[in-house]
Image (cartoon, rainbow, N blue to C red; front, side):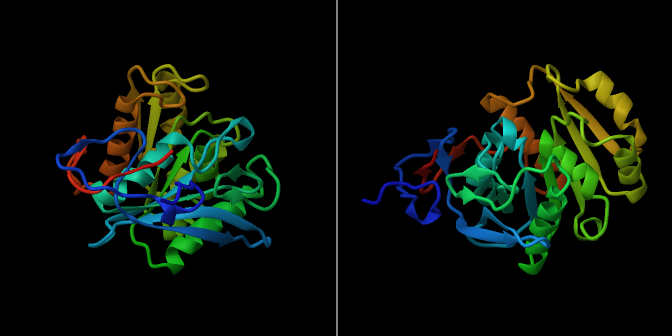
Length: 267
């Protein structure tokens, strides 16, 4: 039997179970998974993965922007990994994950070097362009920490603004993204949901409400007990459900906690 290689989705070994199984952190539900490469306008190749429902329509497409790579963020950061493991099967949602420039994961190291969120604009545009060219519908940006800065700075500007339906932000620090970016997002009219952990290290709910007041359409939600990294299954479930409530509101929540069908074990 071939050992599971996180860089190669085809090595996942799915097994049928006699009874429904509890969905755990490493449970991988069936999906059509493929390694992808994104090409940026400045000539770089970025490595990623696309997970699609096995059958039926794609209800929405999540284009995920990971946390700060200089502090351990990458395409496999746990909330995004679990989204790709679960949401294609449970919600009919496509999940696109990738490493921004200079970022490494088992999938590979993307070309280039970390640029503090400046040249990463091309990375965001490349991911959205890929989703458009593949015909993936109802595209939403989902940013986490550093990824929220990329979403806020570039999601409301052409060409991205015309190709997405909105964004969901997880733990926005509002370090690199400032009031000008917030005002631009407000003027765009694009929906924006902001999930702010009660015990966040950088921006907590009360201050987030004040700062995001510059975006009239922003829905700011404080999450009791949560921290910046959303550790703990109950917090992961909350995040996934809030994402779906915006991107695919027709999907019933809460999501099932058990799965009847083939399951593989991931990272």
